[in-house]
Length: 211
Image 1: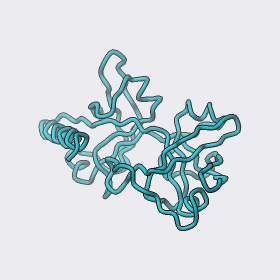
Image 2 (image 1 turned 90 degrees about the vertical axis):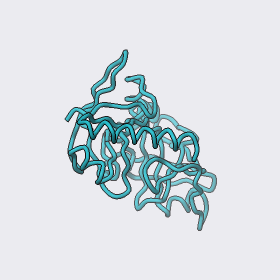
Image 3 (image 1 turned 180 degrees about the vertical axis):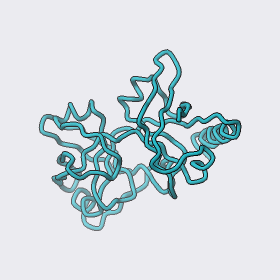
Image 4 (image 1 turned 45 degrees about the vertical axis):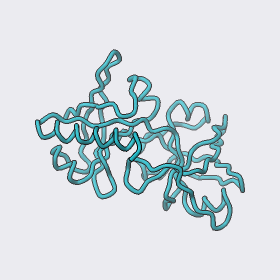
């Protein structure tokens, strides 16, 4: 087991112990800009029959950062070398920060992952071609992943909304954090890089739940 896995295992054990004492904490992660691709767009960008290659596993079960990277092209600029996450999804989704949106010249729209109807689009460029994505560019809404067992231990359920406190010299309370609980989820709150930087937050920092 590598150091990252050991650290996460210890962090989750600490959170479980605290929850048993009636104190609720969650590990945080800054979600860097990334792209989820449909299989059709994988083929268009990397070649017919191409399959995404895992680079490293993510904390959410079954998810991985892929070896592949693409360029996001907007009306005003381009962001190169953006990591693709796997496995392939039904629809392509591009997750960026508000700072990224300004750089690209795209109006930022805050949405939960998967809710991409009537969102802006962009162009993606890969080594074998490019695709015009008509919609799917979002600034991901703050969300808290939890397994059903973790949600039960915390007295929460899928769809609940909580606030989280980040202590420190730039203390921040993150409101409107949506709980996403179900199979394939593991305890972790996802914030974008703008939010994490504003709070001087590092991956693995513990945030206190304010119900």
